[in-house]
Length: 255
Image (tube, rainbow, N blue to C red; front, top):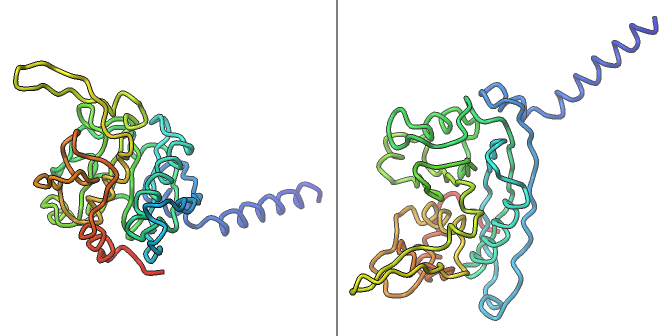
C-alpha cells in the first residue's frame, strides 16, 4: 500500500509539472531538446538630458533562443537588452515581454555555417521553431567566417522566399568580446590604423533596427547613426524618420 501511494504521488507530480509547462513541451515536440522557458525583465531606460522629454509610447515583445554550449550567458543577454532599451528610448520605444528559451542546439547546430539558401542552417532552425510571433533572436556560437550578427528582415528577398525565417536575428558570441569592436582602416597613403567603433554602439540594437525599419544599411547619410554600415560612421544615434518607421512596424504595439 505504501508503494502504491508513493507511486500515485509521483504520477500526480508529473502530471502537475506537465500542466504547468505546456510551452516547454511544445518546444520539445518541435525538436528542441531539454527546453527551459523563462522571462527576462528589461529595466526601464534611465532618463537623461537627451531623452527626458520623450514619452515611451511603444513596446516590442520578443523571443530569445539561447543554445547551450555556445558561450552565451544570461548576464550577457541582459546587458545587451538594457543597452538596447537605452538606445530606443530616444524614439519613445522600449522592450516589452522578453521570453527566453534555453535548449540544446537544434540538431546539434551551434553555428551558422550556411545561410540564405534552401539548405541554410538558419532556415532549418527557424522552420522548426514553434513560435509564430516575431521577432525571434537566436544566440549562436559562431556565424560564418567571424561575423557578429545579421538580420533576415521581412522584405529581404531571402525572407520573402522563405517566410519562416522572416524577422529573425542571429547573433554570435563574438559580439561579447572587446576585440570585435575594433576595425582596421587605411588612409590614402596606405597607412593602416586599428580603431575602435564608437563606444555607444551596440550590435543587438543595430540588428533590431534592421528588423524594425525593414531595410539594410543607411549608407548615404553624412550623419552618424545606428543603421550606418561603415564601422567609422555607426553609433547609437537614431534619426526621427527611423523612429517613425520603427513605430509603424506591425510587430510594435502601443502602450
